[in-house]
Length: 267
Image (cartoon, rainbow, N blue to C red; front, side, top):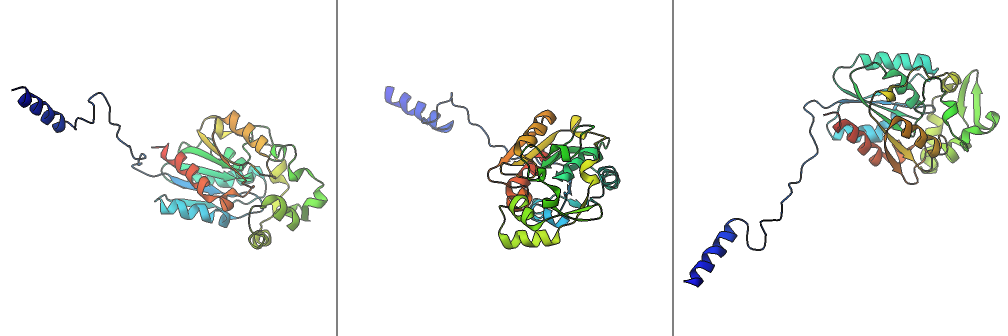
């Protein structure tokens, strides 16, 4: 009789998951990342000495994930006018938005996204995130390559500034192959001096959640300066080891992952 009882108990244990799985051990389900009913549109804003094509490696990855993406052609004429143009562009779009700024583009989105209820998140990529009254030039940080003699840094045409090739390749894009950085230098769009000297009038990061990608070898806006800005904005930080000022090109994977994290947080 005792043998029969033991057999029955063993059968019951197998029926509920096996004797090797004690009933006191909880089984945790693996949850997939949240899926938004409506995926936000990601708006990419480039910085100085670059163009919309600088976002191509990131843009293609975002589209592969099914996100609508727009790359805004930043005029690079001065913070007030550039922010107004970006504000108008954002206002022409419908639904939730994730707005991403690289370098000087970070200052533009800081102003342009303020007051737009559709902007649900900000992402800064090797970028400036000024407070009201600060200029982009002030935020390069101690030891920035841009702190040198302007005559050694720029080729000028009126008020337009072009980075010299040696500065571009050595400090702006040092982690890219020389042929690629030479091509990017030749294609660069100039920035007006007013882009770096105009005081910021708004600070969208005070009211909107933000994420920050920081290349820890950035020589244009120092990592120390970026960490300061990220801390005061309460941003979630992704650090890219060895990343230059152009992590959006040299390390598009972690940049895209950070943008996706911001997008999913809007659900």
